[in-house]
Length: 153
Image 1: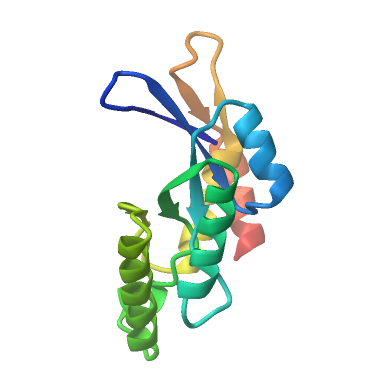
Image 2: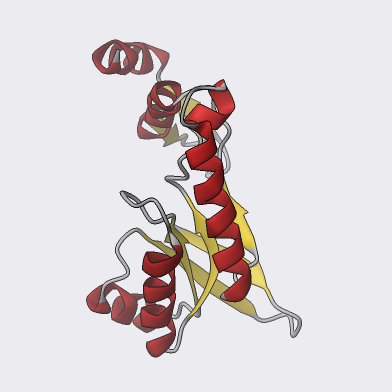
């Protein structure tokens, strides 16, 4: 996924979402002309500070900048008001504080009702297709979506 953003000089900056900011992926992103990297929220940890800082340092060593953190934000218990939401709120607080220190100004998240619904709805993108009329139009295959939802549930 490549995002476009204009800077103050009206030059286009390319950002690349990397779920794995490995040396190889960073070199490929830079070779493709990206100047910015979008990172995902660190997973499988209680405190995102160390893994996020390490990822940002790795990105910057390759001459790239991190401008956004998105995806995998643990917040389902917060949204549903469930036990364990305090732990998720602490994670998000630490994430935002760390992002501020690292000069990352954008956090993207999706406040879906629950993770299962979010997973189910994310399958919509699997079944979108451009039409022959215009690259700006997409079509949904509702029958395929219904089948996929049954498989998930």
